[in-house]
Amino acid sequence: MLCLLKLQEEIALVKLVKYLIPRFLRSKQVEVPVVRLQGMITAQASPLKNTLSLSKCAIALEKAFSNKKAPVVALVVNSPGGSPVQSRLIFQRIRDLAEENKKQVLVFVEDIAASGGYMIACAGDKIYADPSSIVGSIGVISSSFGFPELLKKIGIERRVHTSGKSKVSLDPFLPEKKADVEHLKALQLEIHETFITLVRERRSERLLNDNSLFTGLFWTGLKGKELGLIDGLGDIRSILKELYGKETQLRLISSPRGLFSCKAMGGGIQAGLWANAVDAFITITEERATRARYGL
Image (cartoon, rainbow, N blue to C red; front, side, top):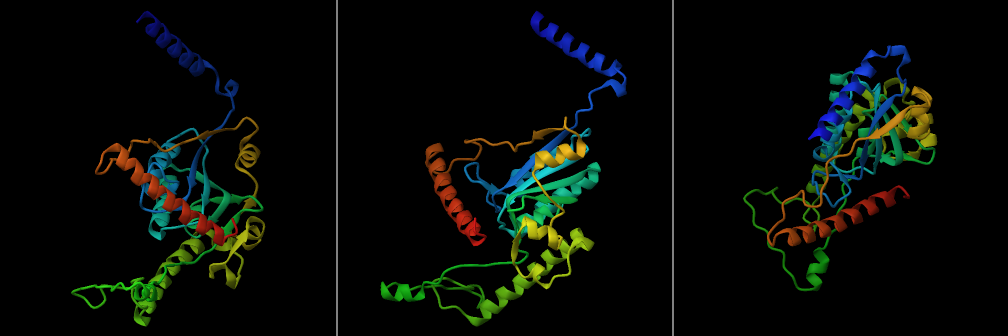
């Protein structure tokens, strides 16, 4: 107990000394909170998966923006995209927190910020990337497989009963219908327009007047700077030290994670872990396939 009281007295004394030291004599060291936004963007959160969703990054973002002394919040983005809804929710949360706390946001792209990943990057007041980073892919994609002929060969009959004629759409086990495809493309156009509007609003006059910008194409950071998709080239540490001084310290703000943070299903913890492991494998495979589209 005596040791604890002594420690508390020492802490109080340090705080008092800091308070009495004139401001011009205090350390000019700047601390910048950093949040990593990494992985496929999906609504399904799991402690074993390298995925990104609003629920997984919300607490870290709140902590970063609550730092009153920090002049800016830095975000490291490394995502090939994913859910358009989660992408926009994360974008909007960042902008809301920036306005509420009157903070500037600097975004640093690592390997990739494409599709939904680039949408999140647009939450930054400035976007930086490595010359070899992949940026852009402002578009919408939907991919699947069709197995109707395979079912015939192995003698399996698909049976679907609905109370609405359009209840079953783009079923991979049934032949593709033209009306279903047209409906899907109409939805994609709406989502694409939302994406384009967001990028135009955030990047405004910085964007080059290039017709290819919104076609779904993607570029390196070097070309992205020419097109106005990003503002500069460089890494987070070098740029922050250049902006705020050599004494600038980066403080990584992590989201709370834990192996047993999710409820185990059915057979208890072991079954829950196996289910998460399988789910993680599927997600990793999907992310690898998505990254492969960008040559990564």
